[in-house]
Image (cartoon, rainbow, N blue to C red; front, side, top):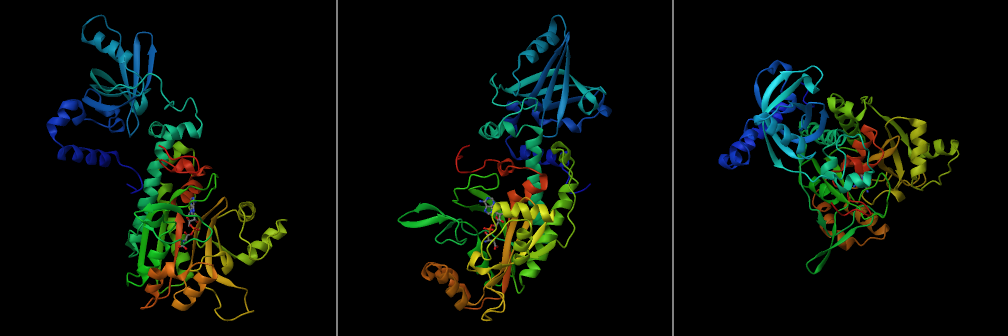
Length: 470
Ligand code: AMO
């Protein structure tokens, strides 16, 4: 089986292990049925006649004459529970209880499997016992069947329930697979996973505002990027490091592509230039696409993935502004590319591509200039690159300045105080190898891969200009 597919037996074995380490009697008190629970898709028509128990949420209730259908949903899918009206006895009592249970209540059901080609997964369950573990309120914030659509804001306000819908559930299973694929790829290539502080004392990405926090009697900030720390690790001899962690940007943007708390995959590699880390980046993207491409849940998003061919096209910043000028969009040399310029370029190029050779003036102080000291030959250009999807920027990176003197000058020339970077600069005074790296936005990668327009869709609990809860 492809490692990117979820195997429900795997999920189930983890689930069982969880129970094994818990106090069994507590579990039994909760419901004796849970212990032997099967996932809906674990049962098939081949189990005809067998006794099973399932647990999940009441997804739908349908009453057709003397027959009542209860659709129970769990992580794996749906099971149909079918009840026939009886006069008197246990069956009637069960029929009345099942009829009354509110949609989205959590139930366990025990009964016999009966082959039924018209039901989901080709079987139905004729119930003998039902326990309601948690009764839901009658008025629901969302319709989990997807029949009644809801605005994104309503969905985000009731995210726990939005996650019960098939589409949203699959987005987050894919997100988990993307992160696993990234880790597998980097681990395989000898990278060491690291964790650097999120409470910091200095900015890294010029122009991007910081979130100040109160840190006892001192000024501190939430980190914008692990930039300074991953570079300092290059002085440790670790050679190849990565981190997957939150980054905080206090930008006032209220767009479909910006979050105030995003997740970044950052790498830093010693003894290489920007060219090598660009190759790692494109290979990683192709690897992630190929892993996720095999996931059956993509169908729930009505989406097919085509693995991009590597190497990706590379254009220089100069070529980019020339292409834009031909398309009627004038950019002054040295200006950053606006969102509209990015869109125009995306339409012209139509695939993943790198923009290289950026003017140093619009890249951070740590980007290595191409021709140090050779004035006039090339304009002030850096070994920096951006990886672009036709609709959105995915990553930025560069070869880094590793000379202490140049780095200090660069910091000061950006109007920053070298004193506040002393802890960082120190690492450049006692043996710092040449190095390069990049930062890749996880949400940008996901939204672009899955053809999703709003970045909030791919974050469980997004933080944006207006949203601080849930
Ligand atoms: P940069 O600031 O370009 O570079 O960020 C790297 C990538 O992180 C993602 N990203 C965001 N995603 C959502 N919302 C935001 N507000 C947001 N800001 C950034 C983007 C972006 O391409 N230190 C450098 C990286 C490096 O050179 O190693 C940096 O942070 O996908």
